[in-house]
Every structure is written in structure tokens, then in C-alpha cells.
Length: 79
Image (cartoon, rainbow, N blue to C red; front, side, top):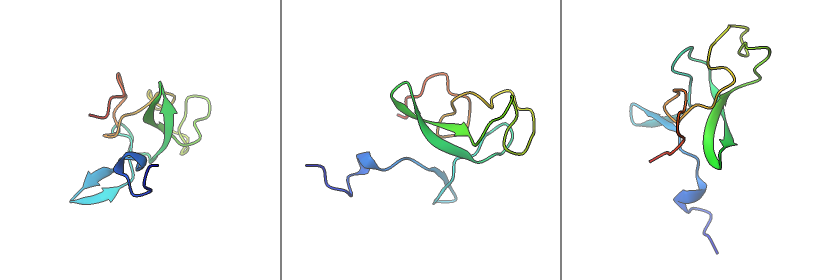
């Protein structure tokens, strides 16, 4: 049985100034939502529509997975 406080169950957050913070896109600054891609945790733009992010801006990475730092993920290993 896995104890609920096991760190393997917690999703990583970006750390800024020593505090946990939401993951944001390094290109445009949009807040990203967590999801699963290739059996690993990845972050995606919230509600991408037609190559645009939730604010309506055209961003090249809008449909691609991001890593925990907010960059386009070439490989999603979090180590």
C-alpha cells in the first residue's frame, strides 16, 4: 500500500523564490495544465484552439507538450 503522502504521488511544480508555483510557458507566459504524454507528466496550453492559446495569441508551441520548466519537451524525463 502506498501512503498518500508518498512524494511519488505529487506532481512537480515550478519553484520560484523557494515557493511552489504554477508551470508557465517559457515562450508566452501562459499558465499550463498538467497532463500525460508518452507515459510521463507533461504540461500543455489550456484550451488551445486553431493554433492559438487561451488568450487568442498564435504561439508555435501551443499544441506541444512542455516540461516542468515550461519549455517545449523533446523528452519528458523529469530527472
